Length: 57
Image (tube, rainbow, N blue to C red):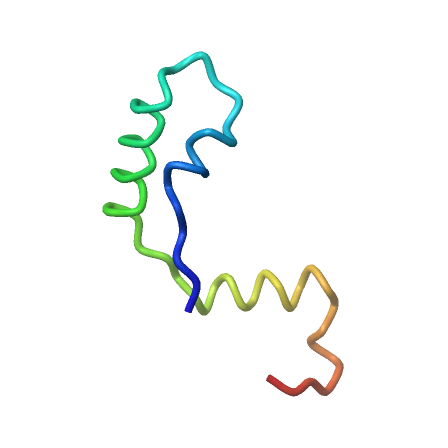
């Protein structure tokens, strides 16, 4: 499992906002958003045209 450093992520965004404000915005985003991992998997499968192929996870 990999941890995300929100401080580094906040600094990576090009924005006129204060880095502390960007940090708090990222905290709110990750606290409130629920990721649909099945939908993400389908998106990846579609992007790389993997539906008709065999694959090993």
